[in-house]
Amino acid sequence: MHPVIWWLAATDTPTPTPSPSDVDPILVTPGPAGFIVGGVLAVAVFFLVWDMLRRIRRGNYRAQINEELDAAEDAAASGDDDGSPRA
Image (cartoon, rainbow, N blue to C red; front, side, top):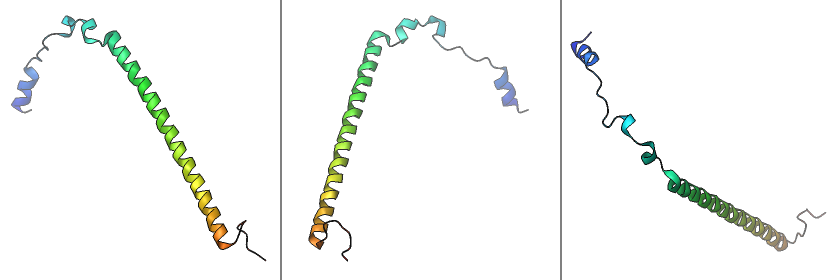
């Protein structure tokens, strides 16, 4: 093996400072404030998605109505009321 690999294998791994046992778990958790902020964000996203879907449905409905009106205008302009060929 290469001497550098032997040297790296022989060195000790340093311990992180501060060690994980020194950290108070209460100080590193979001706590009640984080829970409330997360809940408010979830509710806000829910209502934003709900409003977006409502607007998309409304736009699709308006486009469908416009297509039907355009088809009716084209049929009236060509003289066909029902769209079938005359015999």
